[in-house]
Amino acid sequence: MPILETLPSTPLVLDTAIFTHLKTECLINEAEKAYKKLYVKERIAEYYSNTKTFPAITSMTFFEADFGIYDQFANGSISEEKANEFQQNINLALAEISVILPFDQRASKIAAYIYAHMLVKEQKWLQQRKTKKKKGNREAKIWQDIFIISTAISHNYGLVSPDKDMEIIAKYLPKGLDLSLAVWKP
Amino acid sequence: MFTTASNNMTFLGSESNSYLRYLPPINPTELKKQNGFRFPPDIEKAGSPNVKQVVKIEVAEFDFELELKISKVEFFQTEIVFHLEFYTSILKLSFYGIKEDNRFRVKAYSFDLEKNDNTPELVFRFESLLSICGLGKKLVIQLPNNKCELSNSSKLELAKISNSLQGRQLAYRLMVTEKALRVHISFPKGPIARKDIESIGYCYHSILDRKFERFCNTNLQIGTVQTYDEKREIFGKSINLRKQKFTVLSYGVTEVESVTTPILPKNAFRNDIQKLIDLDEKLDSMVMDKYFNLFSNAFEGLTNEQIEALTQRPDLSESAFDF
Image 1 (tube, rainbow over the protein chains, first blue to last red):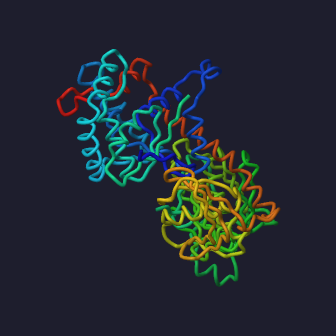
Image 2 (image 1 turned 30 degrees about the horizontal axis):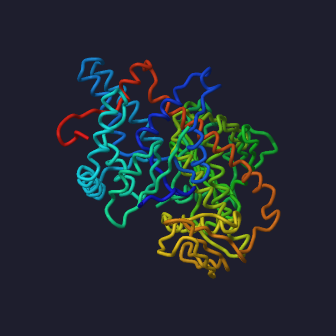
Image 3 (image 1 turned 60 degrees about the vertical axis):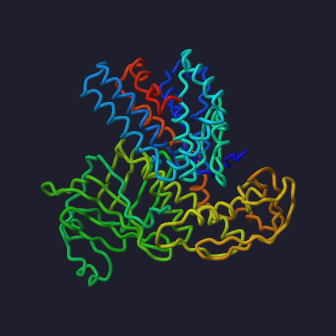
């Protein structure tokens, strides 16, 4: 399987799930801090100590953050003014603390290769994943994770993810490419 | 590619209400004729009889004090530049601001290192200074007859401070390599390539950790053990790490064990350098606090429900996105 463990010096990019966990940990109140393990914060601090860089995020995660805002606006839940304000706050903060890895031409080729192969060879697993989602599990659709993996590989970054789905996706990487994967769990 | 601050004009912002006494413009060539720096006559008259020709930089949180001799001062309409003797180089401390009546209101300040042979120790000291000043809440700069208190803006760019900490780490790793292997390495004038950063890290871990893991592109069987005379290149200079043992642990990962690689001598660094080295954990922890705060601030003013709705993953149901 073309999966490598990440080393302390490997440049890392967070997937959207870890990014969301980080958001949750950052917004936790003082009372909750006493009993909740802030595992993403701990791992990021450890990573920073080794590399003196902050983990990157992909343009896909940026898209997901922006989508959430505009979705609320399109549905009439927030005003255009509020949507712009939230969008600006989030984008400015993210741009300052993270390198944003773009979904480039190399990434798009890798993503297309994986997606085509998975649709043929992992139909059963994809259906199961879809059913899980319908039952209320907020798991991302596979193409979102494929875009994130391919962006990480295209820029020679290791990927941080909390789940093993990334390993299944990585089985369908084009020959000669490896995914450096760090699984961070509470 | 990575660029140390020593290769870049470095601005450290300041939102201060500090005032310097107004220093009138002086033609820099006149200063030269005076055989060394002299204060403008009105400042000398008004000041203490024991005018010290030094600048003192203090940051209380880090118990940091640095006294540097002034070699030259330049006065411009909106800028005052102190040229300070900084170990083997010249540090330019610039104050940017506006003249108000007979005072100079400081709006911002910056440090800049004069380009010359940038040794790891010099870069380490400079990047440490920038990190400390950037992270300290209040910076006190004692000028002859003037005290300037500068409070850092909370909007100070974290990426710039982090860049300095990265430069500091690279410089420290090179200092370790120099001491252990008795070599001299100079920082290049331009950006540093990723392969050099990797080699610097590799040499550092060989000397200090003695045993570590690394990626390798090899088709050797898992468990294969081989010993080589290992050499690395840093900024075009060959670094001989002597004998190292390599064991293939798994696909793509090898364990390296230093066999005859020299070790770092005890008490390798002078006390003042060691004191700066020991600040590493504190500097990291302050950067992390700022990082997490910035992250939280992005969601400021939103209710939990709004945050939940905004960060819900998109669900596009068109056929191309159906999985």
